[in-house]
Image (cartoon, rainbow, N blue to C red; front, side):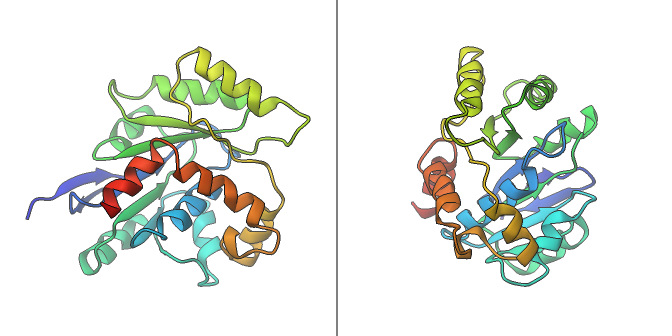
Length: 223
């Protein structure tokens, strides 16, 4: 059987080539990286076995999962290899530390099927995201995910999407709205789609699953 190497920020992991790896990273904290990693893991769990590797020193994803109510495994870099030796995972989502070094960024794209750069629509976060994209090796399969977008009548998300498209950045057309239910879900250790009042938030992720590049990852698994 052939294997491939996938890198987190601290180690290389030997995995089966059929496993899809999705890495989320950012030069700036507070852009919804961990929330996006957890919600994507919930989404992918509808289509196969999922593990989230929590390599962020804050261990926010681990804390979210501590109640045991999330529909996927959460592991540290140290325990991920052991888990993958016992169980085949169809999707592995990696939540990286904020502000990875340039050398770490080079390693993160190795073996990764998709690199997601979450960013809020404010100017500081957008500039940090652009710096992140500039540090990526040429040919990296990455996409930008706009997160924590204020509701109408504010046009922050709409304006940010337009700027990114005009600059030819590979941005996903559907944005993730800023909603209080995310903080509540993290505090209770629950997935968004099981929260009272979480339907609106979960719909954003359902819509995301219909769009490239997320739709391609899902279709390759269920085909």
